[in-house]
Figure 1: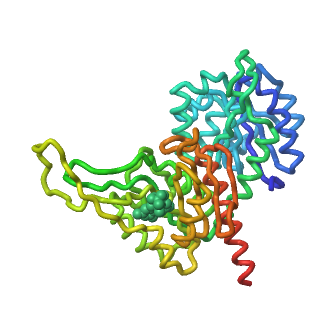
Figure 2: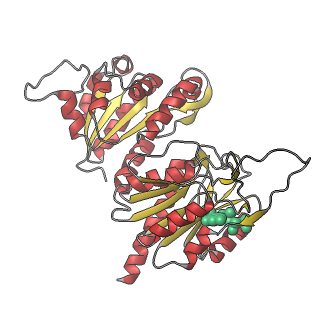
Length: 404
Ligand code: CTP
């Protein structure tokens, strides 16, 4: 996967910078052309000569050290990269990238680059968990920067906690998976729903649920990066929608039904990650309800089950449903899969730590008509989305092969 690929390796100044040598060596061994940029602080931890020898190219340190009058080095490096790896990525380097600073060779090149970026953070656990770092990573994540989670273990500062640079083998694997995944869904149209529906009973009051929209948006982002043409039908969400996708905003289950059905015929894959209200208020008052009696009874009626409707109308679409369960996960998930005529059901036990609504992680089990198809540990929602879509792509590929 890495043969012939140009990888720009940004090395920033943390103690884990020494591991960049192993990473660089492994990338070169896999056939990648590696160009290294080091920050001034990185040079305090590891000699540029080490990375020059391993990469077989000069290491770039200074924006103004222009050796070739025929090119502007930071632009040239930015343009040539198929992928940018930042390893280790310090809190400072992430902050600079998030803020768009360009005050050294690496930050200037990153600002000029349009290539995808994978960053492998490494820092003290409190720096990693600091709201500023968390916010910077969220900002970068929204712009498409991917992260390789740091590991938990002995940190150089003495703590035993999260913050160790991911192992070089895992960073290489992430780079390989990145290139492998880019075309997995090329030419496919994917429709995904996200968020929680809003069912109003007067102009300012409504029933909704805890869905944040993060899982649906993660599916949308991952599908986009796998080459799919993506439409997201999103109800109420807590997070901004990803770029590079068609976004259709809706509010209620009824509006979502309409938006999804009108786009169903053109879709190859439909993922129903939204938390759709099962019931809505029968009456929607035109003016704000006034309080009078001691109790108030709201009468609710069933909404249309969108997924079941899609299952009924299926004409070649690959249908993926979600199931949030609190008990007997496999049994309930399989029941939903059959009732709603899905190809896959992504089920999670919402009582489990790291798998509930609103968080940044999920732990899912995926079922197909034959039973368990994939079981994932607690992962970031983006990675969960990638793994699920890899399975979808494999199934679609298989289906095509059978048809031939
Ligand atoms: N769903 C839907 N339309 C609805 C309700 C649910 O499309 N009106 C979809 C969700 O988007 C999700 C799947 O159905 O993909 C599972 O949702 P859930 O509410 O757990 O399904 P139910 O069949 O309503 O499950 P339960 O019997 O547990 O209420």
